[in-house]
Image (tube, rainbow, N blue to C red):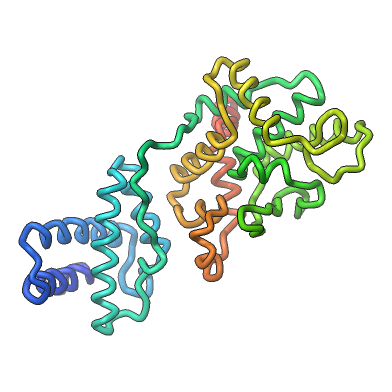
Length: 304
């Protein structure tokens, strides 16, 4: 009978005995640990994880993403992560594993309010804007780039033409703390940027800025905020700001990929600066995920 048990099940039982008999935790507390760890065990088993070698940080991140998608509260997810961290710390101290797959996993903060995001339908409505002149082509390119790559507005306006790599498939971004990261640029954003650059050539400017105003100087973040808000209103949407596009990028990509750690790295969050040493992102995979999740991609598939 025991031979048919998933490999984590007896270890979880040992850990619960340790908590109850050695640490002296109450029945209610150990029951809470049991529920959380059984959820992780079932998720790992369903994911095809058969031993500790296969139990990587990616599985843990995907499990947390799955909890988010089930609308479990941040406070509850904090408890799930705490339970898992305690369990794997116990296994490490017992000499069963060398490193805990939860070691670099951070618990989500309990936000006072959730960030405002656009639904895929609202993003489609916003991006369906038809530019009539050079200025509007620039504005659409900015919107597409921010949504495509999850940029901060400051990162978008500070980008230069020379920051592109591999025929505009990637953009080198200077983020907070003067840290540089490489982000993928989606196909729809590339098209919008090319259309803007064709107009930009006609302007008399020596500035290397990717996005310039009609006088040839680098466009300001304040101006971008105003442009995006006005376009959203023109498209029949409530006021939209650049950070809503960034949040929408992260949310829609998370729904498509379930890869929290990679998304956090793409966003340039400083808390993952250590993780970046150990992780190399599959950018091509993320580009494909972005294009498949882009509202226009769904529309194109429906037409075909």
